[in-house]
Length: 277
Ligand SMILES: [Zn+2]
Image 1 (cartoon, protein in one colour):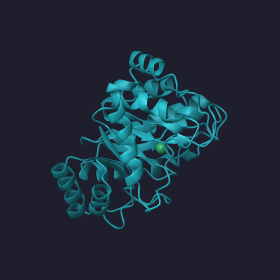
Image 2 (tube, helix red, strand yellow):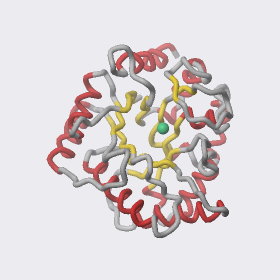
Image 3 (tube, protein in one colour):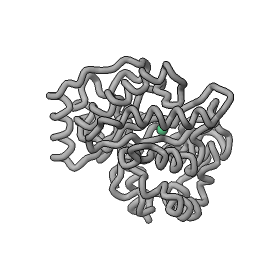
Image 4 (cartoon, protein in one colour):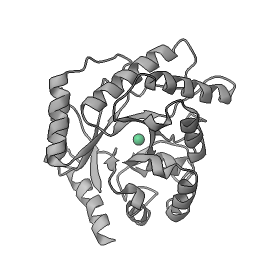
């Protein structure tokens, strides 16, 4: 299994990979562009390729996280900027050799939720029409905080299937969001696993955001806790981590860092859960 954390790029993608290696991670997540703006970024081919080469040499895997405001559910004409960002993000993560670009499912402010789903499909279609890279767009499930869409595996599977290029789209499961939205109770991984297999969700799971939850099951609140310090609890994570669907994909912490300012300790804790199984 590839276990790691979100790390800062500190100016270069190569630095993100180096930081990940220095804290004992075999997986990491980074922001390919400024997470707090909707501005595209020029690809520095030297940097992206150095990142890709180092990861390959070291046997580590990565994912990029799209800017927070990237919302594929918006109506036209705002869609244009979202498509541009998706294309830009895909180019960067692909050049970095990453598994994919994680994108929140989307929030729709209009009255008709079906229009929101249509917008997402349109946006993903435009972003992938000329794309030939190996990295995926990874749709992330939502906690349900101020959002009605993207709380269930059914929605994600259907949106993917209705896209023109479903082969370019995979999923990133955020465990805190799943617990908040009632997708995962914590103790019911086996049921989730059989449902997710039948629905064809888990076969397209390409990454996991491993977060415990500050709030209780079904709270629809998105507050990450360190593993074992929240309401999901260690035993539930242990069962989940043993799933065959989690082997070979990046499992990345988005929790607060430890006393040394890094995730070194929490990564080794997660790895110890695997060994104890
Ligand atoms: Zn997440």
